[in-house]
Length: 311
Image (tube, rainbow, N blue to C red; front, top):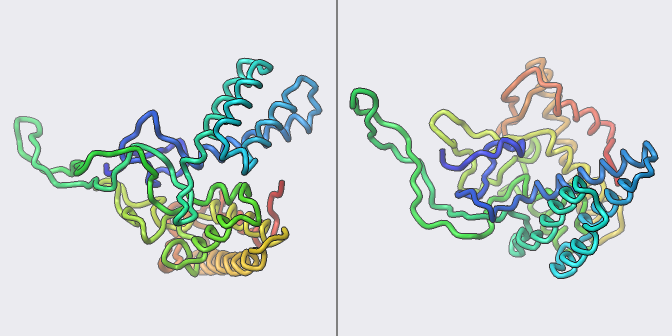
């Protein structure tokens, strides 16, 4: 394969660092930790537990969502070591993982694009090449073999796509930040993510856009449109179109256009085929993958009702 998969992320073949290592850090993992902490905080509030969990989960969520703290390495270390003494072993583990991600946040922002990237041991010069190999009984055959043409180094993994928007989806970015404007530009740019049917999973500018990962592994999260991620992006657009800030009107326009595109395409496909589909083609909007698929694609009903989860 060209790149190793991260099935546990749910984004299967989405481009990650070319050479996995202990120095690798994923933007989406950090944001999922924030969402998990918020969910656990809400659950403890719901059941009104008085064992300290509510406070600890709430503190973790607050720190992970604080845009200023995210960029202050020294203060993160101080917070970490001054707080862990009051946590149970289980909570210490959660706290440690989330705050390590917090500290490493500054590794993820690419200021030129206003996009968030994974960080890891990476090179773009990796390819699949046909090689002659010897099978059973020394019989010659050909197979695709991965080749690395330059030494990887610790760097940002420069692929714009859904992962680049995770801090935006979690509404971490302040409404007055220049980064928000950059994110809105990435979303609305036809050369990157925008289509008439929804937002594609990987930018057309990516070296792996619609590329196979192996001979038998066609692109999955490398271009097609997925309703679950589009719903989360719509939720963030709706949020930023409601709060005061210099990009409020821009967010509203993009929100209305994207919402209309998604609804029209899903309804059109339903009338054509009688199905909701797992994903949709980014070129013509045609349903692809599993069907009938009333999992996340049924989120279109919440999009029609404009029902989103707000903090």
